[in-house]
Length: 421
Ligand code: CAO
Image: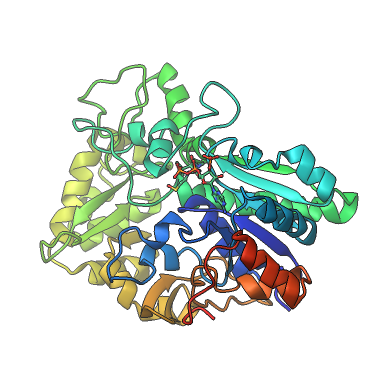
């Protein structure tokens, strides 16, 4: 039995943040019913298309294992179906612009009245406050959550990261909120509202930078590259590739000179001797000018330069092997190409090849959280409205005649194409 088998999710999510959450819940075994606007669907179906007339990778990689129903929730017949769906589901998840579900005519009070056990989970850009009505995309969240001001090099502009910490990061938070609320419902019998704001999610991930903001009041941040020669202001600066933890780290070059021929090295106190032996600089192991973390702090740049002299003579994987043999943590900079081709990630189901009815085979990132009794089987994403009839019949118990009448009302849009049937 899958961990979330029997949990039915009414999925009003779109774009990235919400869909990542419901995709995880689907992989845990929940029945995720994605409600989409007839004829249009989730906007990502057509965004960044690499092939004509098939759902984009953007969509397919965020919506696997879900069922799709098309429903115009602003029409009268559509609202009647939506009421039935609310009664039949355990969780409603949405990430529309603030107020959109209310404008559809379904404020929280009404949802609760229809189904007191329902958990109503939302992602918004901001929590309550001056910005609560604002629409937000990934990079807006990275900028307003403290990530951009602390990412990049000191002499360059703020940078957004390649990881979708605002969208996928907040999707994870919402997923945790949902399963926690489900657990609470087991004992209380009641549903509740769950809100995950993207600004909050990014700030949570940038927690160490708020730590450093406060440390600044008591002196310079000695592990930052600005120390000891640069200047600090009263705002936490960008630290380049300096580690956010207590151990100094930096990305150094390796043999090859390619864009990703780098390895991230971390100088744990006990690793210094190992590095110096590998670098052929044994004389620095016990030299009081170099031997302790305190002695090295003002000259971290020189420390990493010494290590780089050695790493540049080796391939990044060779450096990784040599350091790990000595129990020294390090991270080769892996490209997406290398990750896509990595056999161990295929073996664990972290990178999965999926067969899609109209696209054919593609790669996706599978379930990153592994449950021993509930392994994820990653399937394709649904075609637009692929399961409309099935959901009306099987989930809502509508008769053939009632389903026909609903099609005739226009609330379901066009009948699904032959490919989708
Ligand atoms: N039937 C009828 N109408 C539907 C519908 C359906 N099945 N599904 C959606 N709609 C309507 C909604 O009711 C809404 O209409 P109103 O504006 O009249 O209320 C509209 O479609 C969707 O609105 P939206 O404002 O959410 O969409 P947008 O493309 O303008 O904005 C986004 C997108 C992401 C900026 C916004 O949804 C948002 O800020 N969401 C919250 C934060 C978030 O999750 N951001 C992450 C996005 S990924 O980077």
